[in-house]
Image (cartoon, rainbow, N blue to C red; front, top):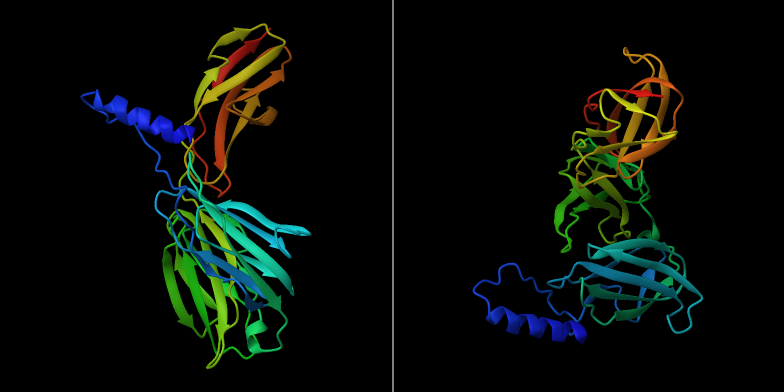
Length: 313
């Protein structure tokens, strides 16, 4: 309620100004409703991989998904409690009763939860089979845009359906292929993607089995050394190394600090990972050469920074 009053205040204040370009408003989504697509309330699904999905709402940044067993009022387990930018999520579930719910959120507002109760049941039919994904491994991060997606054959399956979903909030379907092979060569742009496969025959489908794949082909930005300055002299017992580098969106980046005792960089004095672009170290008397090189979780690396010399007294 306070945020709504603030928005009204800014609207009135903005009317007194010649330009309001720099005043930003967050849309109030609190009266909107999330529409669940599957599983719907009072439905039964076969045990295995269960795919949760819901419709996209405008002006939403994240969706808060929760899953309880047997329900939220008498929960013995909270199996899922996560924030998502996409509008699908999958999880392996055993025979039991469950309740799931989703609400939409942005920086200032949130909707009420939409919820549904469902049962997971045993099945001896083809639909209960699982397609076992093999490569890439789950939650794989890579700097290679081209990836071969592979899976094991499912009993009695005559073909497979492969889907690749984009990382945007709306959950855009990028690839939807019917295949007889158990592999598919895909080229990805940068981002985090969900890929999933199900088995099919003339009468039935299995549930989808899914994995997350992150692609990052951009190297970290160059590093600029800060302290200790080149050709400087330090008398501090504990020396603070510092540098600057602008982060690149994507996989996690780390900076490695290298300190040598010789100009040819043959004698490594120490190597360390610097957190927040700095590192502290008690130094012995001597001359040292230092530089920083950055890496990310996908395997990209930048060119090492300039090598600077300092004297420790």
